[in-house]
Every structure is written in C-alpha cells, then in structure tokens.
Image 1 (cartoon, one colour):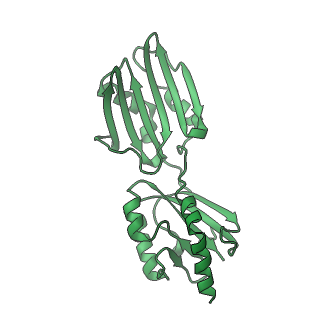
Image 2 (tube, one colour; image 1 turned 90 degrees about the vertical axis):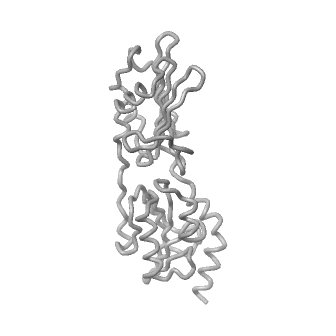
Image 3 (cartoon, helix red, strand yellow; image 1 turned 120 degrees about the vertical axis):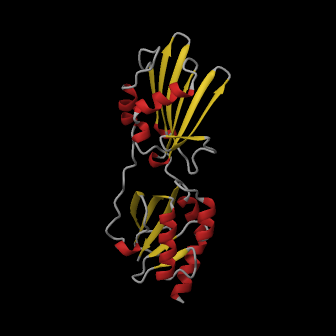
Length: 247
C-alpha cells in the first residue's frame, strides 16, 4: 500500500516535474567578465578595438561590437538551449560549425556544448571563412571548459549517474511533499550516461522505468518515459536533468 501511494503521488505531479527537468540552464557556463577578458585580447584587422559591450545575462547573451566607419564586426555568445545548432556543416577544432554569407554579411557560428553556448562572429568587412575562423581561435572561447560540479555527499557514490556533472542543487522538501529533500542534477548527455542508467535499472528496482528505487529509500526520477524516450529526445552533448528524492 505504501509503495502504491508513493507511485500515485509521484505520477500526479509527473507533468510538473517533467517540465522542471526540461528547463535547461539558460546561460553560458562562463561569465560576462570572462567573455570580456577573452575578447579584449582579440586583434581584428581594420578595427581599433571593441566599441561597445552588451551584457544581456537575463537572455543568456554577451556581445562585443567592433565599429570603424561603416565597417562592423560583432562577437556574440548565446546560451545553447538543449539541442544546440540545428545543423553543423563542418568542424572547427572539433566543434560543430557553420559559415555562410547573407547579403553583405559573413557569419560564422560554432556550437560549444561544453560551455552551453554558441559563438557567433559576423562582419560586413571580413568576409571569408578563414578570417572569421582566425578571430574565433583568437578569442580562446573555443578552448573554454565547463566547470565540473561536485556530487553532494547525501547521494551515495553507487547511486550517482556516471558522466559529466554540470550542476547539482539540493533543496529542502520536495514537489511531492513526501520527501525530506531533493537533489536536481544536470549532466551532459552521452553514451556513458545511458550505460550508467541502464545498469542501475538492472541493479536496483527499475520496474517502473521512469523511477529507479534504491535500497535506502532514495528515488531517482528519470525524464520522459524511460530510456528509449531519453535516447530519442536528448542528442549527444545536450543537457539532461534528473531528480533524486531523499527519504
């Protein structure tokens, strides 16, 4: 009866929980100050330096604008959302990229899942792919790495999902009202994450598919409706969030 009650309670708030799980971090994994420090060292032919900075942290965007007469170049960082760029036409230093021209503007976009960002460089003066790629490399943004989060001690090591952990937030109480606390964790989607989840479903009680029940009462809530849907919905390098419910 107790187990059935828990299932009913969790299922009753499943839509709310699922929505929360899919609210991905809407910001790059580095600060505006780090962006300024990187871009300030960039030397752009035909420009004296950055003419204007814009810090739109609420929208997850940073912008540096170079102006010289009618010539313009901008360097922009925006948060990646969950699937990143729609399509990468080639790879720049191992990262998915796209270069194209639109009227009198040349544009380079680089997908950077490790820092949850997309780098865009555009200009009406520097019009070649080689020129814009040189600037992208100068910024150093291609080499930035995500800060790795630490698992909270209340989650035993054997219950932790393997993979790159980007965020772990512990809060008192839970959405269900029946647990002492919950831990929301965000990881980078990978084969390692899926392999770890599949193994835990075998080692522990994963009969309900969307929950893994551990022996000490901890429950891991999976997004969507189990492994197959996770694989279909979350591409490699996207962000994926899980909730641990603590007894």
